[in-house]
Length: 293
Image (cartoon, rainbow, N blue to C red; front, side, top):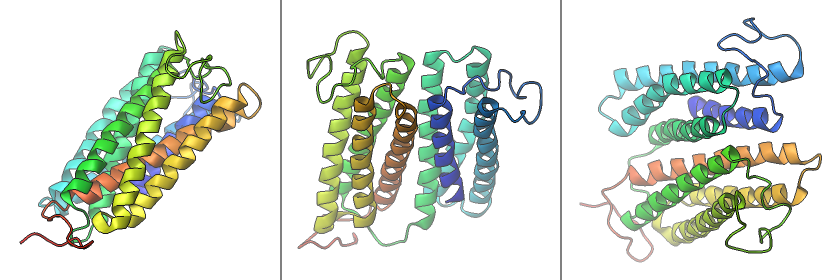
């Protein structure tokens, strides 16, 4: 849980770095302004906080991987995501260094963000498997619906990274639900933002379906409800982010949008791991999920 929480914090701090335009606060790597710890200037400290958080995450993920391999090797649902998360760390470190050395190229920043979200999903899946009981928690149909929602969520994350890479976050101006006077095509870079919005609506609809199924006894109600609330909050933040435009609230809402994306994605990953881990189930009968014999 500590590893998953720290990974989420790393995503949030990365959002603060972007919103505050502190990506080059430390113009070198692995040092910051040629020092192990930066001076007391605001921008280097913000950027350095991201690196410091990454160091904590690295230590936790390494510890989890070692413990999983030594103690829970028979539990593939724990060992596999733990080792996947560990494998992503050197790759992400190299990408982070390249981002600094090349002075924030948009496409590499986008890839760095997407891989960071996949990395966080692996730590969350490990935590979800660790806390899972032995009783079945979902029908096969519910688990399939959750997997499709996670796939749609990943597409949404990629689309968001494209919007950021193309600097298209303001391409629709301050319009919602329209974009430059239309619903399905804003023209130019705005098309990326329109696709991002459409995927967000798709994910929202799928999460509503998940919550309905969960409350009918076909899946875990708590996680499903939390995912629904997180996606609803993220939609509200995203809409407000568009409507506030380039005012003083733009930066804080940009950081909130990244934090909301991380929260919703983490809950979907946890829900997927929790539901998929119990595959020996039969369809519910009279509202009751029963184990397969």
